[in-house]
Image 1 (cartoon, rainbow, N blue to C red):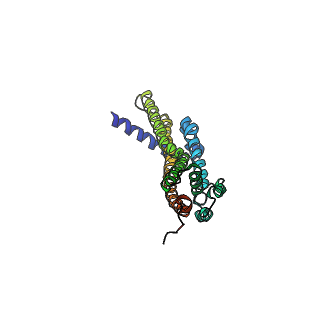
Image 2: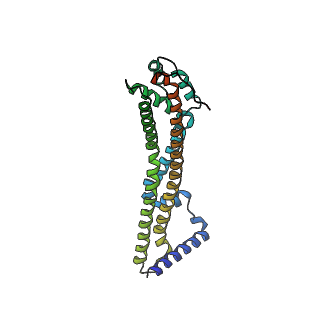
Image 3: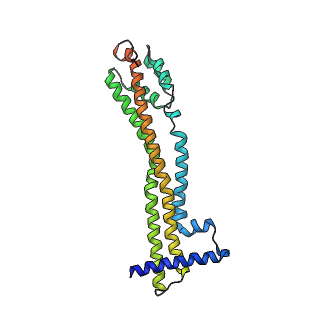
Length: 245
C-alpha cells in the first residue's frame, strides 16, 4: 500500500512538471517557487535564519582576523617595552590594545601581585588567552546553532508537506489530481532545500573560524612566552638573555 502511494505521488509530480512545461504562461517566479510555496516555515523561520547567517559571516570576517588579534610586530614591540625597569608603569600602555598578546600580558602583570614567579605568570597568561578564545568561540557559536537547527526545521517542513500530500490522496479517494498534491510536495521539497541551503554554509564557516581561532590562540601563547622571556629581569631578577635561534 505504501509503495502504491509513493508511486502515485511520483507520478503526480511528473505529470505536474510536464503540465508546467507545456503551459509556460503558468510558470512561477523564483519568489513563488522558493519562498511563498514554502509557507510560514520558510519565510518566517528559514529565510530570517539565512539572513542571520550572512550577517554573522560578514561580521566575523571583519572581527576575527589575524591583523586584529595577532598583529605581526606587536609582540616585538611589547618585548622591547617591558624588557627594562618600571614594567608595571610601562604595561599601562597596553591597556587600550585589543590584540590577544597585549590583553594577556597586561592582565597577568596587573593580577600577579607580589607572587612574581614565572610559573604564576604563565598560568595567568594561559587563563587570559583561554578566556579570549572562548569569547571568540561564543561569537561564532550562533553559526553552529543555526547549522544544526536549520535542517531540523527543513525536515519538519518535509514531514508536514508529505502529510498534506497523503491527506490529498485520501480526500481524493486514491485518485488525486496533480494540483491537489503539488502544494504538499512543494512545501516538502522547498523546506528541505532551504534547510540545507542555510546549514551547509553556516557549519562550513563555523569550522573555518574555529580552526582559525585555535591557530591564532596557539601562536599568541608562543608570543606571550617570548614576552615573558623579555621580562625575566623583572620577574626573577635575572638579566634578559634572548633565546638562541
